[in-house]
Structures are given as structure tokens and as C-alpha cells.
Image 1 (cartoon, one colour):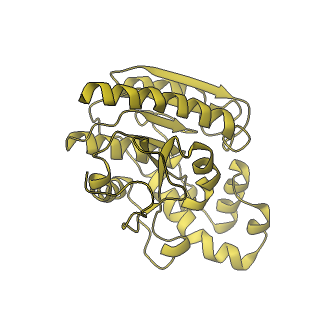
Image 2: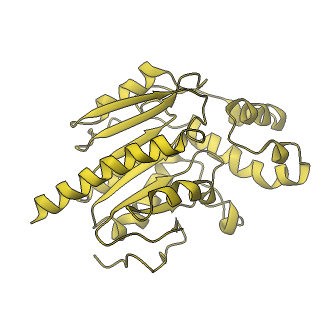
Length: 262
């Protein structure tokens, strides 16, 4: 493994590390939702450290990458991110994604696996399986309708949605992510040979249990579905329970990887 672990920051502009990890910790790549940024997952990282090394993907068009053009094709984005993560995927690693990030995590995991880097686990949140069609046209709608959809889903500070200057800054990235999400088409790639764990909210307007259960078709290993109370951003109030589920799985993953490599 050429990439340094605890104490050093990733050199890639695509990755953010907020906390260091203990030696031998499993590396967890985190993929934000549409319109999301790496900082959203700072509390997530804080709760997993030092048991896991959390590296959050930072998409272009937001925060320190504000002036970079967004990527509006999810497959193109997956190609780029997978190439960036290759040197970081030589240690035991897992992936977590919320909403759009769940689909992206799957696509990146598929590409890494095809290149010889096998994920140890995939955790998906608030997203239907890739094989379940998700047509949508919000990306073609007016700013007002896009904002209304953001309010429906939650996850964005209402003060931002009521501030014209802040809206002008964030809407281009949000719309681009909606383009990527709503134009995404599953290409029938082979299932992953790692366990998949899905989390959804019981009143999420975007995904229900059958849609999430279909993730079982995308793995040759075990699948578990956790239905929690809440809407699309159920993970915010349930962060402790979700983190504990992931940490327990990663502890098992780390022990298994060490055993199979020795």
C-alpha cells in the first residue's frame, strides 16, 4: 500500500479525511447525496474514528472545489472516482453512500472490483437498487420546483433555501447532481461478491422497502435491510444506530481480511 494511513491527509482533491484511525482499521469510502458535500459527514466520521478510517469523496462544484465544473453523468463520475481511489483501495476497504451516493458507491465498487480491488462491504442508504428504474425530470424543472423538491426531501438547512445569495451558490451543483441521478441507467454489471447492507426511512418519498430489497440482487453474499423511522434524511437522527451497525460489520470485516491474508 503506497498511500499513507493515520496522520497524513490524502493528496487527492477528491478525498477528505477528518479524523485519523487506529493501525489496521478498515478504510471506509463515503459518497455524499445529491447536492451534498464532504463536511456533511464530519459527524459520521467522528463517531467511526478511530475504529475506521473514513475518507469522504468530495465532488467538484462545492466547497473548496466550488469553481470546478460538476459532472452530470453518473457513469463518468464513477469512472473518475474509481481511478482516483485505486491507490487507496489496496487496504481492506468498504463503501457507504447515501441517496445518489449509494448508486455511485455501487458503481465505483463494481469498477474497483473489476480492476482487482475487492470491496469488503457495501452500505447503501436512502436509495433504491440500481436495477430499479428511477425516472425523474426535476432536473428540467424551474428553480422553484427544484427548491420545492429539496424541501420535500429535507437535509438542507431551511435558512439556506430562503437565502437568495446562498441558493445562487448551491443550486448549480444540486441541479447537476439531479441530472446525474435522474439520467442514470443501470448497465447490468455483475453483482458484487461482498455483503450489502441497506438502510431506508419508513416514510421516504423516494424509496420503499421493495425497492431497497432489490439490492439483494446486486450481491452474491449476504444482504440485510434496516428500515428506520423517518424520511429521506432519516440517517441524521439515527446516526448513532447506523454508525454502530457499520462499525460492527467493519470490525468483522477487518478480522476476516486479516485472517484470509495470513
